[in-house]
Length: 115
Image 1 (tube, rainbow, N blue to C red):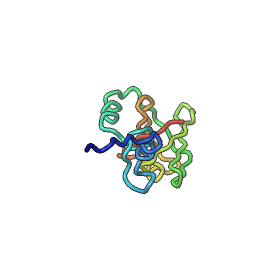
Image 2 (cartoon, helix red, strand yellow):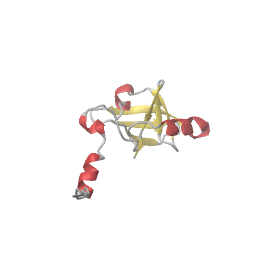
Image 3 (tube, rainbow, N blue to C red):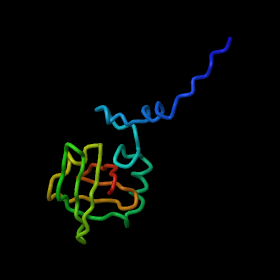
Image 4 (tube, rainbow, N blue to C red):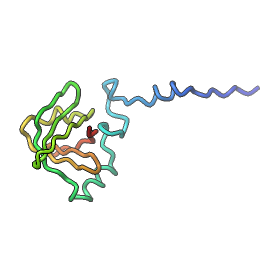
């Protein structure tokens, strides 16, 4: 006798795909704003002309949101589940890779969602 196949519903699949950082664990997703993928970091490092210097204007550590202003005066809203808002302080210089969405705060690199 064979066991019938259980096909999970789309709701079950999407619930399992939720990032572990939603539950207080380490990020299990490489979506924008979550864990920095090795390839993403290497691509950002290989394209130095895409880096933009900026100054942190505002941080909200509870929500993970940051607001930075480039040296040209353009404001960018960013979000990171990995703690970029905990590392950055208002007035601190940062670098943002415009193409691959990598934020560098000091020596630490973060994957950020750019709004």
